[in-house]
Length: 220
Image (cartoon, rainbow, N blue to C red):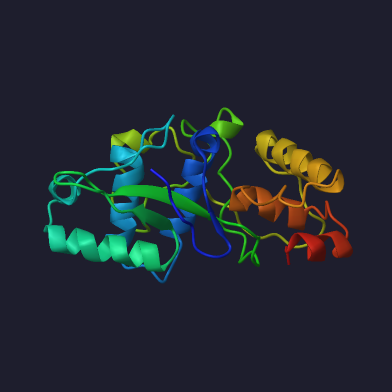
């Protein structure tokens, strides 16, 4: 399906989806402008219906509603909220029985990073083993554990620390941050565009960029 992304957004391409989907879910989960049902529908689209290789995602409303256990109208409202918040884009299905298709959006430019709460926790059974496995922890504070299909996702417990910046406990964060900095200095203006927030936090906290470079990159 052909998607027309809104201004300052672009559709995540199939080749990048496997690496970016956990970061996308983390960002959606932290969007305080979304209600809980919209966040839940976003997770269901990614975890239950989006093909991790081709990114094809075109479930009918009734099937999404069946997974969640709610009405189709509830799903429609949640989808509309995700579209308005510019997390997904719809392609209208044509013909009887043809479902809508959904594309997942990422920012075309970096916005200010808030806080420092997104770095993965070191060690443990859920620590990431490679750069492609880093992503969002779906455990709610004081709530029950996330379902089994989230076992490959790392926990996060990043606490701000004063003084000189310390290297990240996960070396993959430093490697990915250094790679992005080199690409940016080689002329790739979009080098930081698709990085997970914990990698961006490391770029800023470790002072890997000069103040002028941070301003040009849109990081503050």
